[in-house]
Length: 315
Image (cartoon, helix red, strand yellow):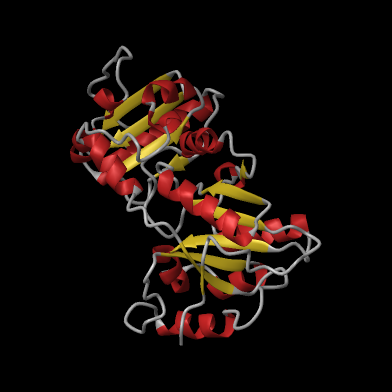
């Protein structure tokens, strides 16, 4: 079976529809970079999308907690997509207290936009190949079309690359002749400009104090400006995963008792790096090795630091 690979330079493979198609692009965006932005731009152009909604994950259940607090990632996306009238930000997953499942987000969008609105879930190849591990993954096809970013010469449909259970599903949903029609249900592989950029590599580069310029927008890279998102950052260490969780829990309890704002908490599952969003204050509680590796004190620069020692949680 051959892959149905679209060419970004060719006309849109979509049939005319009363409702212009909308793209949906999720992810942790930790941080958002030019790979994300170029994928969205080429998909929008190639599929004839009227809009692309960027939906940062709040509490992603399929992977470890993001290294950056959710409200911070939301603002990075806001700044990255500014100036592109086709791109828009959707904060629903960050604002939700529940784990972020793509099937729930698409169901909510479908309820808001109606049963006839064409939706396209935009995925990179790695995310698509892991689709069978997602919550209620088969239901995704009932809620949206899926467009997969494939590098030129990609072998996504080969048996040694794509899980058989996913391959069987795709074989029933790839358009054979003519354009894609309807609001949902198709799978389309689209050739993308190969940009070998990853958020993990960017974080590691910054942790080594290297330059990540031209890998992500200057508005995201400029950490000096990003520090305006909050007035204070508190960094603490716990000697074990249990203690990092206990320290974070103690802060959360004390803030609630004082009647102060307490937002999302991330990273408690592993305890390696727990982040608390307290509005104007962001609290990071880390294992010593994690704190040394990321060295946030130096990364976030010139602000005067006040070090609190011998902080202990109530046990």
